[in-house]
Amino acid sequence: MAELLYLKEAEQVVTVAGASDKPKVGEDLSEIGVIERGSVIVEGEKIAFAGTDADARHYLQKRSGKVKTIEATGKILTPGLVDPHTHLVFAGSREQELTMRLKGKSYMSILQAGGGILSTTKSTRAATADQLAHESRLRLDRFLKHGVTTVEAKSGYGLATDAELKQLRVAQQLNNEHPVDVVSTFMGAHAIPPEWKQDPDGFVQLVAEEMIPQVAAENLAEFCDVFCEEGVFTVAQSQYILEEGKKHGLKPKIHADELVSFGGAELAAKVGAVSADHLLKASPTGIEQMAEAGVIAVLLPGTAFFLMTEPANARAMIEAGVPVALSTDRNPGSSPTESLPFIMNLACLTMKMTPEEVLAASTINAAHAIGRAKDIGSIEAGKNADLVLFDAPNYQTLQYNYAVNRVDTVMKAGKIVVEGGVLLEKTDNQRCSLATEDRGTRPIWQK
Ligand code: IZC
Ligand code: ZN
Image 1 (cartoon, rainbow, N blue to C red):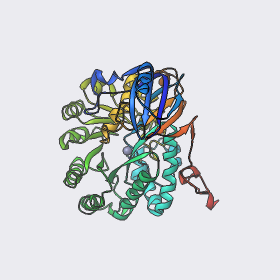
Image 2: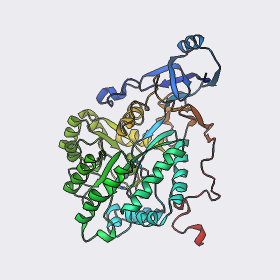
Image 3: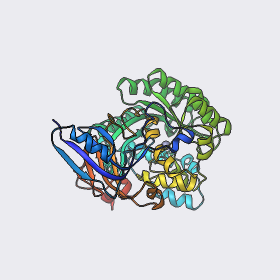
Image 4: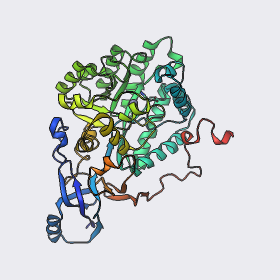
């Protein structure tokens, strides 16, 4: 019989329980099910029990076999954090764009001049699958050290069939190899590549007629996403791609209303998207329609912070009854961070979400945004034992002591993978531990 793991007497266990069927909305977003002096018992890969420590001791009396105890005194226990929007798999670096933006250039003007997404596309096309896997593994390690146990990962730096498939195969490989679970999204419609600049509709057709069927046939993605934005893909092009994706079993997601109000939120409601992401400029009508259609708003306050713009109106969305989730948007141009806890800080400090709301938005609602709420996102018997022990006396401290990583222990599927803030197993054995992004635009082998 499997040994039981007894996470004993945390100051608080934040369960976020009771919302596995539907994401949390409105006032319910603040109901995070805190158990004071709580304990959790893990059996194999699953949570067997969550409750007060007194009840945990009763539970253990009825069980035979070995029990390993992990003292949680002085710490709080939460579900493993879930990041529902990343551009994980890429090569290259764009740190020079920060200086360009500081000097007044906009994100979109850099893209239109052939930089931005197109710069990352160039380096990603040139990289081998092994290089991409190596670089992305390092990012997954950093996610894990920040308490993130599941991430979504988009393609969209290939922008040609083979290169898109290469990115998605790497994401699938990482899902199999790395402790962090990786849920894949196909995003061939991320930008118009240079070779299609004169014929954007031709590229849209390529995405719909060639890429989507191959991605679906190889089972390489669960979702289909589009960068629906002025100067990138129109509402009509986005709708066409998302509808074609649906025909092949890919559930729609949308990069919506990030830079200008463009009808992205409305389109999300119309196509029945699982989520609409960004929404900095979403219209009041769009927000209303999302609430009616049950589209999850994945908010990315780190992107607004890094692009030095106003964040999304989270309060209006919560009041309208839109389910809200949070994410890093990890990518090399507009949000180069793996710290979901810092994004949670920004959600509080720049969007006025409360500590309770950010916890629900980064766990159960984020799990809903990637179709995983039956298995992860809350601490309940039967769910996967993806858990984080934070070195904090209460959950409010995670937002109060901002920009500090208080992750002590991370458990993934019942196995301890981070202890004392340190990753227990090296996931990558390559000699050079730097990704091209960490090396900067002049790779060290060229110096
Ligand atoms: O590489 O700039 N917004 N896509 C849409 C991104 C940001 C990623 C990037
Ligand atoms: Zn994105």
